[in-house]
Image 1 (cartoon, each protein chain N blue to C red):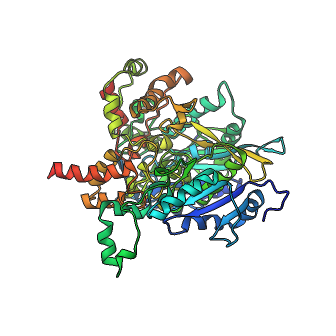
Image 2 (image 1 turned 30 degrees about the vertical axis):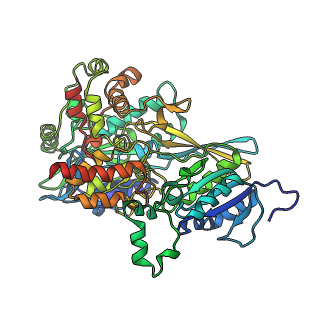
Image 3 (image 1 turned 180 degrees about the vertical axis):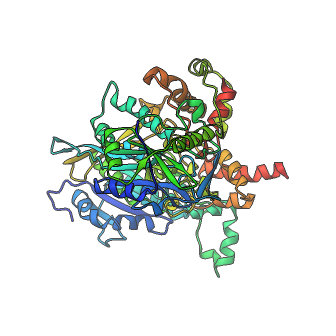
Length: 356
Length: 267
């Protein structure tokens, strides 16, 4: 893996844009660090960090000028790999028309190691035994610029899940933000990445640069806000089917779906069929759904998982246990979004401790 | 509108105690209105036309709640002349804002407001249409959402179940890409206990959800109330947010009562 150093991200952003990518990176909007299209490094949240706890998120001022001094954004790559709504097909006068699958060329700047792990999980889901061509098209249109985490949040536990904080695979370029002087160590992870790097000003990394970057990841690993004991997690959760904790946690669970919507690996969808007023056009659309809605488990007119405890058990057990059966990996990457974005602050790491 | 050869289903729009805003949602369809008018015979819709086509009607959209003795008789007539009856809006579906009278003495109100309250014939409570006649479908919202209204009409024409999810506002809030105002700003929000349909309009403008669409399918107001208290809401404020357009919908009625009781328990 080649390593280089770049002093500014403006040439990188310009290079990606010149190659036809919309560059989507972190920027402060609505008092949160959101991923949105940016045109220059000035839009990055320099000097802004975040404070994350169960059910709590605030943007905070930092006492340094780090551009990536924050943990997981409420936004993950899921919006780009699996958009919230996508038309599947239309039937016009009895003729089926496949919907044109959009796959915008997007360069995601600032994805974290946990996000890359989540994309790898989604790849197993959508490119495994039953490949989804629309997913493949969107996935191939993504250029991934990872930024190694320097400042994990209060709800982070990627170290427990073995997914971070350093990005090791699945990126085109990986950056580590270094200070004094401010610069970025750049690693290439693909030919495309190397090609982009060749198009921007850079110099070879010195041994000191590499050591400084290693130190960033080493320190980050010691600053996890949370942890999970994954030993025998698959078996022990399956065995906890009748735990009284399911009812206890359901008392705090709103079944609002926020955990599943914020989760970068939760992939469940439903389909909506629409018809026009003339009866000549019908359209089927895939939309995000969640195991917390009653309709999601509706079979024969009534929900199989009608109770709150049953729905919470489904979500946690799938994520940390049956996901292994299905896809050979954990469904959880330790990003902590489900903890932060739960309005009542339900903490999966605490639930796992209590349930097992 | 209907010629002799027309087989278009007849549509009627009826009004009870309401502000007319939900009926106007049909007129607000503007771009889609010609298609609607082409697919159904709008036979009775006094907001749009004084022409009064005779019943029976294939689809009746009913706005408003039952608040007068005359309403009690008229809703029976509407049901008799309607093959399908769909309520539109919080008034017809849940009693509306005027159901706040249920928590007070309406005669006392009338005596304060009107010079001659004896001329006012009104019932002690404001009740939804479903309290009086069978209802085929209830469309929620104050006011209803235009897309959902069009969906209900299109589904009726196709003979299918309307796609009107009963899950929380949070589902559409996240799909829209809003940041959670409760978590990120500490703004009280009823989205987690409120049915979707509005497209998460208020959170998209950094406001908390006001609960216009009434309780979602499995509301856990007790858990939300505990959180809202942590965010600084007082008991009167909690009672107030649930007693708006859907105050007498059972989960919201209970949510307000729980807030009052838990204070008594604490106090």
